[in-house]
Image (cartoon, rainbow, N blue to C red; front, side):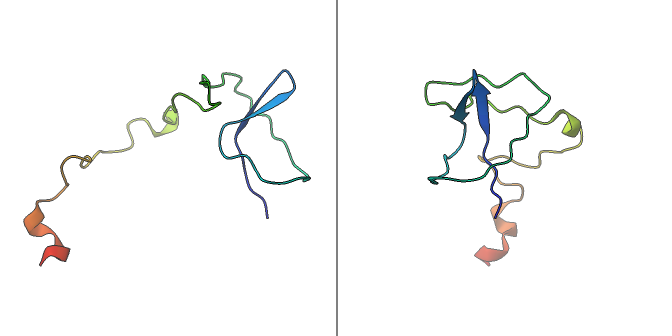
Length: 80
């Protein structure tokens, strides 16, 4: 089974951005991304901020938020 992990390689050292695999020995395929602008890293080796994909700009519509629902409570099927 293949599983993908996000890392940053600096000066030959690997810094894990997500969970670190719990393996003693494994074979790995490494893909180097063309974009050399890596996100800023904090003291816990996690990115400080993720940026939206530029190709999605202007193609989405926000219908609601986490504070207020899209539809009124009277319209909720589960409350009837």
